[in-house]
Image 1 (spheres, rainbow, N blue to C red):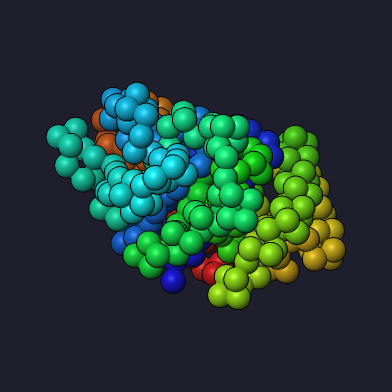
Image 2 (cartoon, protein in one colour; image 1 turned 120 degrees about the vertical axis):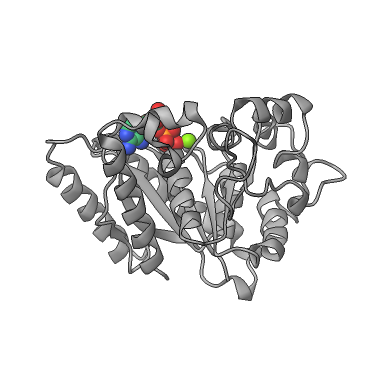
Amino acid sequence: MARKISFLNYKGGVGKTSLVVNTAACLAANGRRVLLCDFDTQSNASIWLMRLERWNKLNSGGHGSVYSFFEPGGVQLSDLIVRDVVQDKAGKPALPGLDLLPTTFNLVDLESEYVGDPKRPAYLLFQEQLEVIAKDYDYVLFDCPPNLLRASQCGVFSSQEIYVPSNPDALSLIGFTLLVEKLGRFQQLSAGFRNASMGAPTQVRGIIFNSIKSGIDIEVPKMRMQLRLNQFKTAKRAAQDAKIFDTQIRDAMVVRRAVTLGLPVNLIGQENIEQTRDNVVQDYRRLAAEIETHEP
Ligand SMILES: Nc1ncnc2c1ncn2[C@@H]1O[C@H](COP(=O)(O)OP(=O)(O)O)[C@@H](O)[C@H]1O
Ligand SMILES: [Mg+2]
């Protein structure tokens, strides 16, 4: 059964997308079958992995991305998946095993224009179909926007785990706190739609520190985060085995450049290397390995 994990924080710009993309790529490089679901209407993960030209066609066509699933006469989820999404310059698969459920800008309509059936909310429709295709994967990872509106709800309702990307600052801590509050409310509202086979509602199982500059001591922000996590655990509002990941991802220019190159950092070739590349790839590999061992 696939492990389903949402990457979520109420703070934007903390590294949700870059963590999902690079972790997914490292898991796939290890032979895992990974489906990355892009639920952020900004489409950063989709643009990154499909590259701009391919994604532009999808975006301007107006259908074939995840929102098509929710439109009347909805398309099957499995027909929307871009298999082996990462390609080399010749258009050949460069990372077999990494599939993408892409998004385009029209996903924003899910929050406004969409008129669903209150008895069958969008997240339930999504979860039911995902169940069918998830058996083809070891991991289903969700890139979420910094909120818990309808698009994020699809990821969260379907997941058994939530990881919270964070920077070592007060705003990330506030984002985490807000997330746990909103999550509690969503769990109450959605409780009636859960079926027995889904297990317990999702809680936060991990905090991942990202974009750590060299020479910066993060012990104090880490301690504050640990205290908050402990409070939530005591109040049973975070998973009892939730932890701050040992692995933290360093700040490295190559992460920013990777988007332009249309490649996860572990696939960026020698010609584009600068000093920190190897090191940050190690970080992502280590993180992927730590996620593998942090099984629920
Ligand atoms: N480890 C890192 N080193 C350097 N830049 C990073 C790192 N992680 C993320 N970034 C950059 O920070 C910005 C925000 O990251 P992103 O993954 O898009 O965050 P989010 O999805 O939470 O909004 C992007 O420009 C990204 O390239
Ligand atoms: Mg993002």
